[in-house]
Each structure stands twice: as C-alpha cells, then as structure tokens.
Image (tube, rainbow, N blue to C red; front, side, top):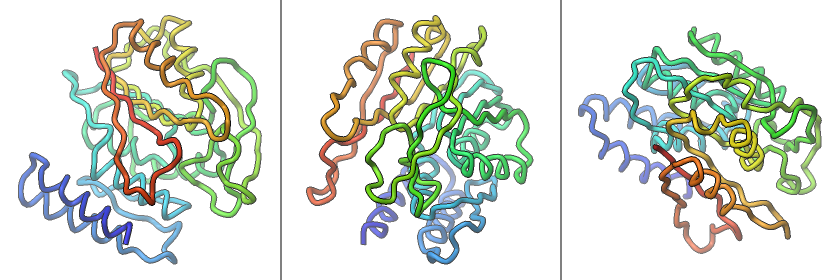
Length: 276
C-alpha cells in the first residue's frame, strides 16, 4: 500500500514536469515497471532515466527509494550556466545520482564517493557498463580528518541507504566494519564546484566543517545536503550546519516531507538546498 501511494505521488511529479507528453509517458511506464518488480529480481539490472542507463543494485527497497527520490522527484535538480559543470556526489551508493547528473549534463565532470566496499564495487560496475566519461570514483568515507572510521551496515541486507557512521540503526542485524576516511577539501584543490550533493548518513557536519576550515566551502556555488538527526540521546546540530552555510554567504531552503502519523520517525531527516 505504501509503495502504491508513492507511485501515485511520483506520477503527479512526472505529470507536472515541463517535458513533452511522449517523455512523460515513457517515464510513467518506467516508474510502473520498476515499482512492480518482484523481490526475486534483487541484484539484477534495472533501466532508469531517459538515457536508459542500466543499474545493478543490492537492496531492492533502497534502490526503489533512491530511484523515486532522484529520478521521479528530482531532488538533485539544479540549473547551471555551464554545459560541463563540476559536480561532487558524496554518498554515491550504487550511482543513481551520478547517472541522474549525467542525464542532465552529459559533459559534466563528477567525483563520486562511496565508503562501503560492496556498494563501491557495484557503483564502479554501473559507471563502467554505462560507459560514463568524466567520472572519478573514490572509496572513502568523508570526514574532517584522514584515517579510518567505524562504519555500520545491515549484515542481512547489504547496500542499505542508511548505512553510515551512526550506530544503532539496524538493531540486531547491525555489523561494524572499518573504512578509510578522508577530507573532501583535498579533492577540491582550488576547484569551483557547481553542485555539491551530500548524503553521507551522519557525517555531513564533519564534512562541512572540513570544507569551511579549509576555505573550500566558499568555492561551492550550489549544494544539497541531507541532514540526519543522530539516534538515541545524542544532541542534534542542525543549527550548526545552517550556521556554516550562512557564514559563507549561502541562502538556503529546508524541506521535510509531512508523513502520515503512523509513519513518522521521532526525528525526521531534512533536506537543505543552498545557493549563492
């Protein structure tokens, strides 16, 4: 029932999109095909976007959630005055956002970061099988220092979107691994970033602190960051994240879906769009 409701909601986004009627019909057909895919197809290739990119994935529910957010609701849409913008995809998972960016801007240069080794392998496969050019892949967690981090995954369902540095999200299924960590600022190295996408499941404040302290945040023109409230009793720091953006001259908007009462989390993640 929940998936059916999402399909109806996503269809409304497609119908309101300023594209041709033929393009809308193709997109609705693709949405229906992906939404109705049975569980046994997990791990097989799906076809996404108007470029018909083929995508392998591990967890079907995570794939569906990412697909409807990125391709149907287009949460990472941005306007650029360049044909070849520079884009950083932080928290790339299997690469759906990277494929979306290449759909919008085929000549773009993209740096994609994913720390989980199993998911990174599929990300690399998806980039290679779709013959994407101008995409750099980096198997790192993004932090405010170099080294290693504890990283929490669901051992029963690899590839979950919610895996990250925050413990306690998977209950008894949770497994801890160690992943390499690095500072994003060392990859900017004087570059102007046209769009910075951050969905790093709890590392966003540390990532932005690194960029701010290195003076790199001032070279970012637009960004979208998903802020994740920490589970348990740990304090949230949303105001600190917004304060960092304000200090370097960003205007921003904050979005959160209003869910039915029975589906609301105690602390709901929010999406922040910022631009100059």
